[in-house]
Amino acid sequence: MRNIDKETRSYHIEDFGEKIVINVCVGSACHLKGSYDVINEFKKYIPLLNLEKRVSLKGAFCLNNCTNAVSMKVNNLEVDRISPEEVKGFLECLAEVKKWNI
Ligand code: FES
Image (cartoon, protein in one colour):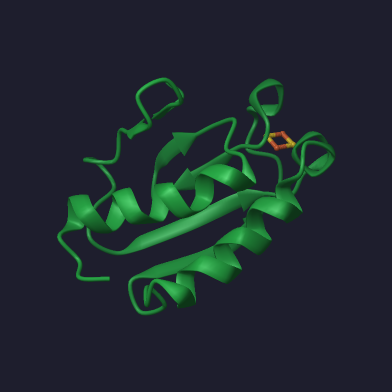
């Protein structure tokens, strides 16, 4: 499951739990597809949206989902084909579902 629907801009994040740990893959395939750009967008928007205490960002080695790079895990949920342009919307949707004031 992709967990992000580009057509509807919806994010299937109901299973993410309370404390959010985002692991962005920095393995070879994901690196080539721009994982560092994705990480930089998270680094930019996590503080801008005041999510530092609620969201942790980490790098991960290959998540065994290389054909769907850039891959990440949000808690135990796999999210694939994340692009830098989707990061802000993803965090905003996460905050909305969690009912966090940002
Ligand atoms: S390199 Fe990212 S999932 Fe394999």
